[in-house]
Amino acid sequence: MRLLVCAPLAVEARAVRHGLPVGPPEALVIRTGLGTRRAPYLHGCDAMAVTGFGGALDATLRPGDVLVATEVWFDDRRLPCAAPETLACELARLGVRAQTGPLITTGHLVRERERRRLAGTGARAVDMEAGPLVAAADGRPVTVVRAIVDTPGRPLLSPAAVTGGLAARRTLRRIGPALVNWAKAVHLTAAASSEKGGP
Image 1 (spheres, rainbow, N blue to C red):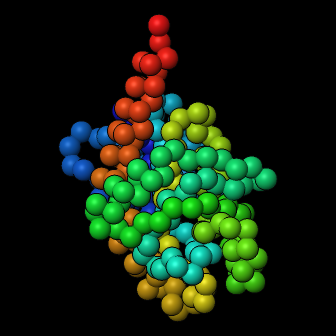
Image 2: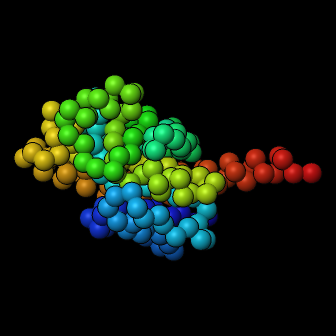
Image 3: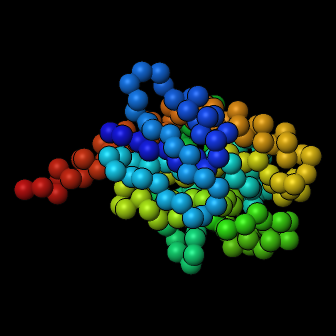
């Protein structure tokens, strides 16, 4: 099992890499860059995780919490994510506050008026990268994990976002073992399904 972890920013990639188990690499962390234009090189990976910072649309999410996407809404598409509840449980075992729900990918920073509009769609968080990365997964199991920086009433471009960013970075430093365990679980599930479908 080989897990590819995609993080848009260097600070996000370093934080996730810090928390991965020591020993033979079970996960490769790459920086994909900011925005929606770059897709990762997927050769040789069995599962993919998109990680990094995100903005809450739902007021029950706080800075440092995690949203595990059930699906990603991007470009009029609804892209499903694999086993979100499994990953949320793995995160909870690490003491990370994790919730599940839909995530919207936009091509720009979301201001408060747009945040209120997007919240009305039922999505729980927003980011700028997950959509095209999930679309590039090419049938592999994929998950999206966003550590919340900004929330309704605490916009990204405000002093409060500094403490939110620090809380989100601390969270990203803890999620590595949960990502690896999620990848193993979905790999085993896929293998079992394949065996049942065989002759």
